[in-house]
Amino acid sequence: MVLLITMSEVTITRLSSKGQIVIPKDLRELLGFKPGEFFAMYGENETIVLKKIDIPTDEDFQNLLHWGSDFAKEKMLKKSDVLKAIKEIRSKEN
Image (cartoon, rainbow, N blue to C red; front, side):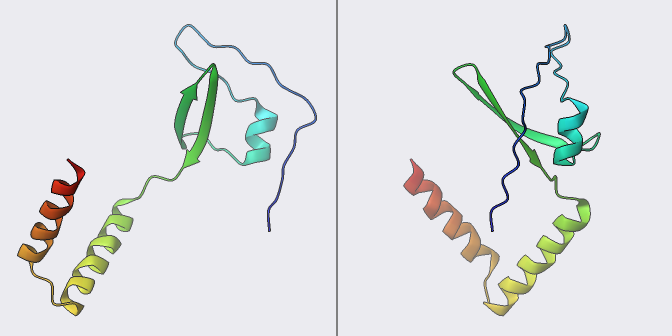
């Protein structure tokens, strides 16, 4: 299911002398943006696209580390196997 959110009017904002742009309150509320959240930005041809992103927590990294360790044990992978695979992939990129 795709949910389309439309706004009935365009809001104008201004770039500050510090390079900051304010996202208007009604748009922040509509999209659920909170102070301190992170955004990825892309710009081209006078257009800027912002995408809210979630930064992984230390707990997320620990969970990933445990998952990776368990996976490696299950597949009986050795450190040398992983390093060899990385080296092979990197050599194909060049």
